[in-house]
Picture 1: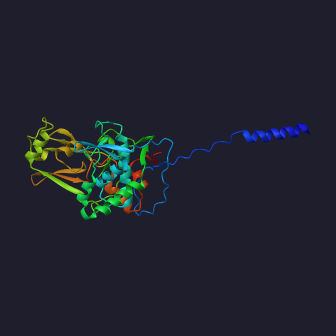
Picture 2: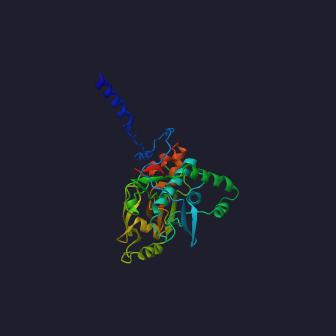
Picture 3: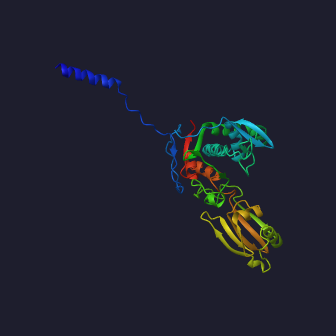
Length: 336
């Protein structure tokens, strides 16, 4: 009997002092769905959980050094992002599109902040290099009487997504974006180094959604020839005009990957630069003695299409769905 009592007391004491099993951590990151074609009749999106700190999410800088007009400015990160969204996307776009732009801009900024390609500055205000940016003064000049309304819409989008970035693995992504695409975005490898989250996906915008969606550039034969010879002196344009245009090869997105002109190969990106085309999604024809580029969309085509984001938002998608569609396999996380 005494032995039983002693054993019972020992069991009680052990239960009081042994540690309880630790609770399992739950990641707050939102996994991206694989990009898929948009439904013909969009349904209302299901409620999305807000991103929460993930164990591997990187910390964000409180301030950012910006090179603008030859001067290095130090700005609070979120203030800088307001200037980026104001410069990069019309403030009249739907709220969810503006939020997607804010997250893309924040992710792009954080991905490049450690590159030090601008010396002391992390980024510059040149959209051809980093991201466009507008100071408050420039915003007031652009928007005039609509400044307060537009600035409030932009600020609300930035604040609603504060601290949120897209990550692939544990690193912020190079969240490239552009104005509009011709049915599909471009694979990053066709423009820069390949990235697994920047692959070609469908994009819903059409000529009904985008001003100047289709544009043309016409050249006299001598201008066409001389412009091409400036880059490829070995090209041969001695024959009839009709023989100057050879095979045009396109990539999976429908953009021009390579064109044989004067018997010499030119990449689509080279032709875009040489003739100041709005994109590499173009047709090239000889019409009435002129060489005519008929171009669809605007920009390099990589990453999020801004007009595509607008259309998706109008169809009922929220910003998390927009980002998941354009940045394949990424996670939306909130910095700890």
